[in-house]
Length: 169
Image (tube, rainbow, N blue to C red; front, side, top):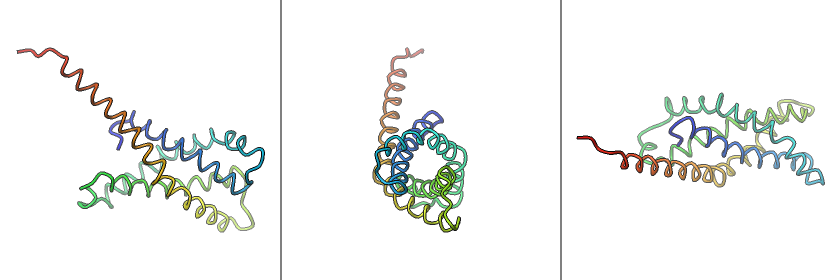
């Protein structure tokens, strides 16, 4: 788990960056298939989707999920292992982000179908089925590994600096 704002930004950049890239490719493949413009479509839509995802993550879904989790969901069983907390927060984050980003995708592509609600529900379900395993099995572990490496390096640097300071009597 990130311990400060700098780590939160790094974690979000890795998490959102990878999730948006894969989910953009997935959604384009679902709607347009793998045509000769596939890579271009993914790369053209990526920057806006990444900005929207980062704003949603840092400003809406992230704070909301953390508030709900730490005020209503966490219990003693979860506190025994950090991974239980991380996985529960990840599942809640995926549900929230899929909810907003599916709507974003429909608006950007102007894909409202004949019935807005049914089109949204279809989009939401298909995105959830892809995003949840992607987050839990691939992107989450990658982001946590990168964050853990940064935290270890920061801790080692801090310990080295602390031991190098002269001790005054």
